[in-house]
Length: 143
Image (cartoon, rainbow, N blue to C red; front, top):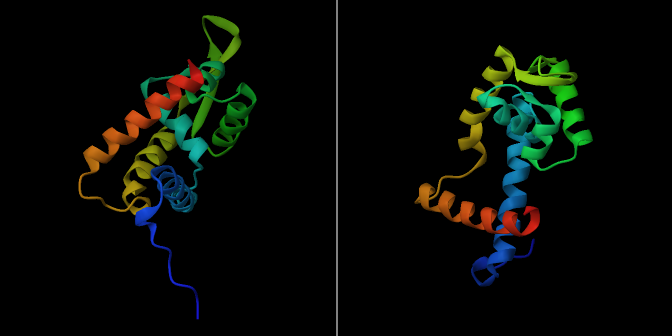
């Protein structure tokens, strides 16, 4: 007979957040995989929502190395989600833009979020509190 589930009510908040993050990440990965995307790919598609960006700017906004964003953009380009064009302001640079297929995939992935994240009583309050945590810790790490 398996052991009873632990009583998580006494867990420290950090442990609860870490556990929730891991479980949501696994579920989100599975849901996105079904849509033909990765989390990194979705981040890039999201960042391109306001228009084309250079890969270096994508990397800065995603807070990853240029090499990391390059691999993600390569995959998205192979799958038809983005296209690269020469930057008219800097002929050595290339701009990355969503394609129509990339836009459709981004919209589909956004609608799938409800499958990966269970409903909570007050989703706006949860989002607000998560934003507070992320902003505070981001300021420490990346300022």
